[in-house]
Image (cartoon, rainbow, N blue to C red; front, top):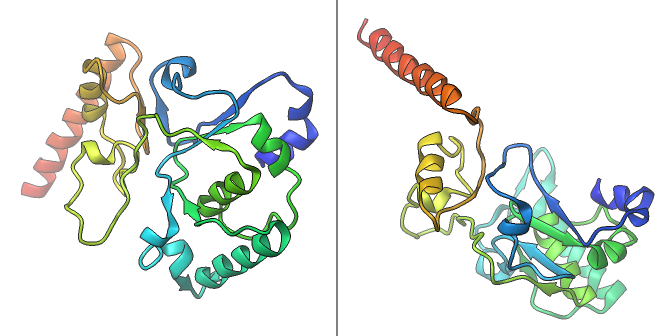
Length: 220
């Protein structure tokens, strides 16, 4: 979708970087401040790491399902394509596509790639970044939690950018905002975010009422 936008409209507009803000992401602050470490022409992809560290258990290069076939076969097909078409011989990288900033220089080439339907974006974007010689932004604070087997159970704070299933709580958001060095991007966030004291009181009252009603129903 972004590549199509670039081809049809983005090329005509003055800009440096597209910041991808997903529907379930909460950003608290100006983009200029949140991405102060990002330099022109740098590609920022959260969770960037080598595929070899995750390929034995991560869904995209390893598993398959009756619904969409073997994702491992699709990964191998993608590698064959970029090796044949671009002579790609680097160590494959992957990411968690949560926080993403795509520079104009990257999209200018990515929007014209051959066979864009091959591969999945969480390894496809980093690998095309390698192919294009794009610099990766590494000095940023956006480190989502990878579900590595055998690792310690993640804390609430570990999951600020990747809270599986239940989403980031409003209480955690509030605690981070009270901390001068706390997080300012949260994912996923499913609730209403109060913007005034009156809305805060309304949300807290609603949450308290839900808890009390739930306890009463359980006891009944």
